[in-house]
Image (cartoon, rainbow, N blue to C red; front, side, top):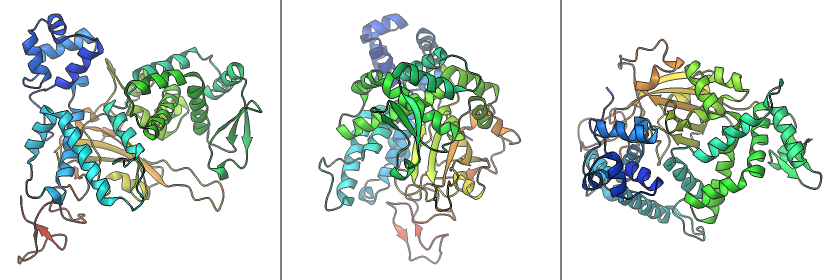
Length: 470
């Protein structure tokens, strides 16, 4: 059964609300009818947040209790578990309870420790010619962490994209003619095509001399829509993106610029799939991705990604995680609005249904899986690769998985026909063999790091080596 928390420690979230309104502890305590000392204890996680006060805060700020979930804490604990699996810590192992306490009581200190560990691993693994700034994280990792910290939702940008969509004139032929007309009327840019763009590795280009937007030939409609939405975001909402970036984005130049690219992609997705319309359609169709895709004229991947961002305070959808990887197991995209956290070291678990999706291209694979923290997820996986355009073309083979907590599964069409109360067929998955604690897994490729190996006994395990119990 999934583990439920009887106590909610929400100090970090309370501080966010207070600082958002530029209030002192005394001022917020007065609004809530509690003493400043009690609020201080709540913010320091010395006291749990009681249900009565939780509902009062939600009513006051127009939030739902889901906004106070422990998603960030769960991700932090998972990162600590994988880090502490490194043999360098073998002489002083911490229990899961110790890590959970640390993540709850001292999140900033945990983040500093994780940053230090990444710097250590970078120094251990770097090539003779290291990056000039000596950064322990690549820019895409830095930006990924920033997006995850924002819960993959950017309110100002999302609302701006939604407002833009609602102002577009209705067009019988869909969204593409409306976007094309806007770019021509507002920016004097006409759409042209170039046969050689794909060979140059480009998907769009603004030709200022010709007052044209150049696109490749024979692109799928959903791709053309996304490119046009990206261009509109760059031309019309650059200042808004800059304000968001200056307020909270990573400061080093490469990460800052990569974060700008991410916001451009976020705007495009939010324009093609406006928040309230998508949420209503998702709830009406019970999150049937294929139905939503056809309704808005976009791709399966675009809808799946968008569903993982529906976390507007007071109007949340199901909190999904979204992950995309290629056939070799390389993670291409990863976002999570729930407790799920993918492995940071080594490949993903081979028991995950995202790998089975490659054997059945274009078909949806549904799986109930249980992670090592005993949480059960409903996972929906499917390939999203484009077809080759010529005989010599070698398109990337990729697949996505969209997952939600089992308590939310019944709200989706993908739970139909499943017995959600019978966990006997739930597939146990792990965070990668290095940090996975399941010794009896026949798919294990190496023992859990940091454990002594038992090679002298008269028994052998499912792999050629066993680890002594902790």
